[in-house]
Image 1 (cartoon, helix red, strand yellow):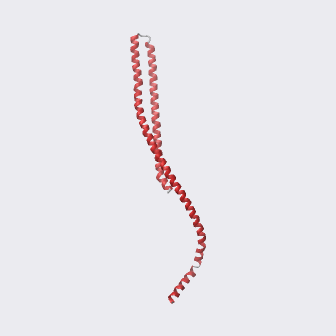
Image 2: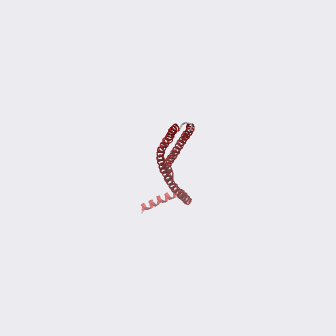
Image 3: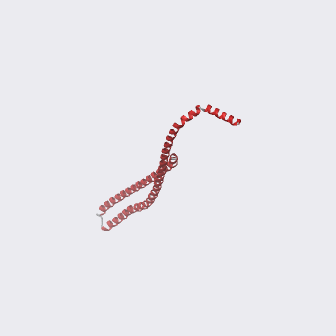
Length: 177
């Protein structure tokens, strides 16, 4: 029974554990991708800010209308550089959050399946332990019983011929009467 439980539930348990590990790796990969994208956006913002600062320094020597026009163009570029990736990242973040939720749900289902398989195997292991204990008790009784019965069987074996002769004589006496 225990062996059957292990053979039946063991593969399910392994499959559930593999699925859980795969879901966990998927979550880690999604987080890693998100971190890399955030680092890329931060670097692009740093570069755009540095370029904006440099242009502000250069345009300070120009006349006010030209400096204002340059400043406005630089601010528009900085806005484009910062908002485009940010909006993309927000959209990807929502999608990643859904993927993580799905993977977490899958991991939970796998964890529950693994838990049920462990409980089932534990129940069968306990039943097997009880069966072994009973077998041990009965085998002890059988050994004790055979110690008593063996001498009687040996005696019967030795006296078999005499017993057969007595039975034969008894039949003859019955037939004579």
